[in-house]
Image (tube, helix red, strand yellow):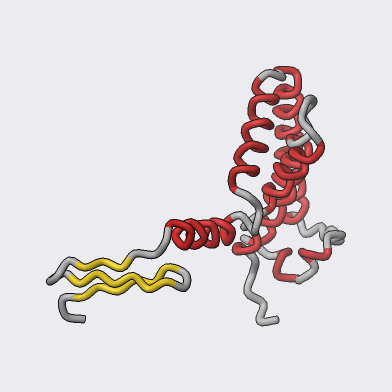
Length: 161
C-alpha cells in the first residue's frame, strides 16, 4: 500500500490518502456501534455500564459492612485450609470422587490441574458467598455473581476430546 492506509470499522471503510489528506470517515453512529460490538465480546453481551454499576454497588455495600468483611475473611481461611487438606489427602494417595461434572476428566486429578481445580472451586465458593451483601438488589447480586467464573476454562487440561 503506497501512500494509503486502510482500516475497516464495522461496515464502513475509512480511507486516508496521505498525499491529498482526504479522509472519508464513518458516521458517529457507525463508530459507536463498532465500539459497542467490541465491548460486547468482553462482557458477553451485557452492558459494561450496568456491570460497572453492579460492581460499584457491591463494593460500596461491602465497604460499609465490616461484619460481613470479617465473615468473608474467615470463610477464605476455612476454604484455604480445606484445599490444603485435600491436597495432602491426594498426595497420600486417597482418591476422592469428583461430584462436579466439569471436572470429570481424569486429567483434573493430576498436578497441576488438580491444584487449579481445587483453587477454582474454593474461589468460586468464596465469590458465591461474597456476592451476597445486604442492601443490594437481587438483580445486581446476580450480575456480580455472573462475573465470578468467567475465563477460568482457559486453564483446563488438553485431553484431545
